[in-house]
Image (cartoon, rainbow, N blue to C red; front, side, top):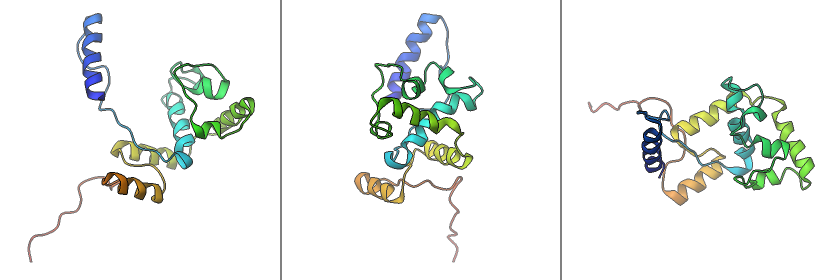
Length: 157
């Protein structure tokens, strides 16, 4: 679906603007996330990406972020609040405050690395129980594999 969308959109965009080439670098990548443990961490990861890339100083300065809706209460008809976000507090003002407090510190480098490796390999990001559940339902291997080729086995006796 993303391939078809990108191909069609890029062609029409390039035609409108008299240009050639790609608009995006690389393939679309995603990973299945265990909401209970990782949703808020992934939200922070995504909303802090422009800060890590030195595009903005604060996440609320990036116009394409959901931070304004989640941490400042701005209305955005494109967003539907996630149950994990709603579970932060039943009172909207307290929920906004709790979400904003998550950004008081940057994500630990280990967590950023964990999210990136799961995203790069498009593997399940979650607990072992969640990964096992996904593997059983999909019949697909869901655990991150080591980088590089697997060690070769000798076919000599």
